[in-house]
Length: 207
Image (cartoon, rainbow, N blue to C red; front, side, top):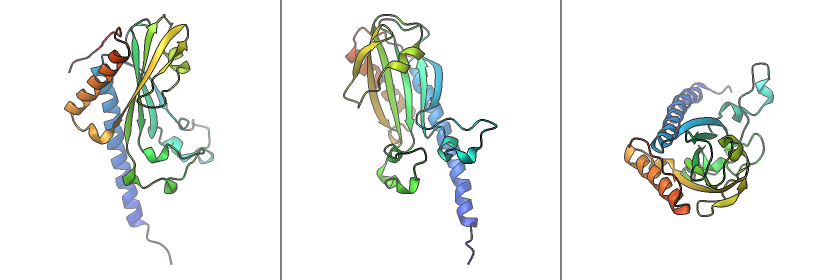
């Protein structure tokens, strides 16, 4: 007996429309956080899977997750000045489904993930603070700075001749539903930066 795919494909169309709206929201949220902290867009990229296949690479031979580059993604924002004492930068790390984080391999099976209702969609705000020294550009500093293990354990080290401190703050996207919540998240991050390094230069865009 052949299966009627019409209801399934209707759900696929709904899923694509919902995914577009969700990704538009994530991009706008990331930009808003960067602007509220007075920083400028610097670069972005997938956090876990490769970028989509180029024109002459067979996509059927690649992970289908590569066609969803925002599922785990990084968007970085920097101040106008080069890295120097007191300067700091921000990376917005988006995780669409926390259930996928522990899944291994280049093409993890979503049917094996934990139940969606038990998982979260998250924005992880990763900051690199220069406590001492100078560097040529933020990209080189970002490449060599280690990611903190969790929200309570900063990473401290020497990178490209700079003494740096890296912090992480994780937010459930469900809690960032309006401008007030977003402003509170930006202020919370700023407060964490200043608490970790009181001499950090505080940047804030229009609130």
